[in-house]
Length: 131
Image 1: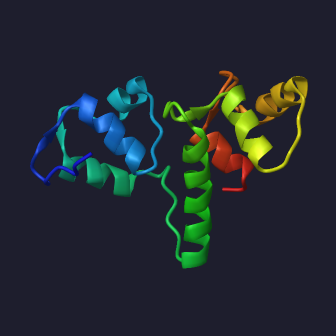
Image 2 (image 1 turned 120 degrees about the horizontal axis):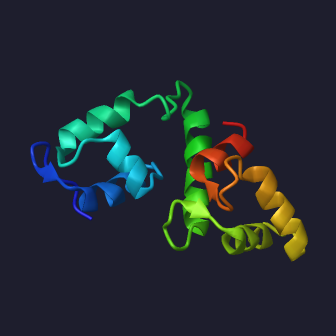
């Protein structure tokens, strides 16, 4: 994906992958509610910098750890939906040498899924990791 220049108009179809690339996992409806489209890259970036949901770090080590958690989430979000379903969570735990039965995974998912929609969003994953 090419990063647009500051004045280039971005439509909703371009906005979703751009938002995902910078670490925001918004659904189509959330993007529509948050950002008036079409927009420009400059407007999108201004929104991104001002948005309270994006934590700013003063310590480089803390920032690197935070981004590692996000990268780990992205790695296992195989369908790039911005969520982890039970199968993606199973793969993540299996790769980290945790052995869970399907019932245990379902319970783990329930604990991590704060909004109860059956999947783990990035924000829920970050909360589970202490952010």
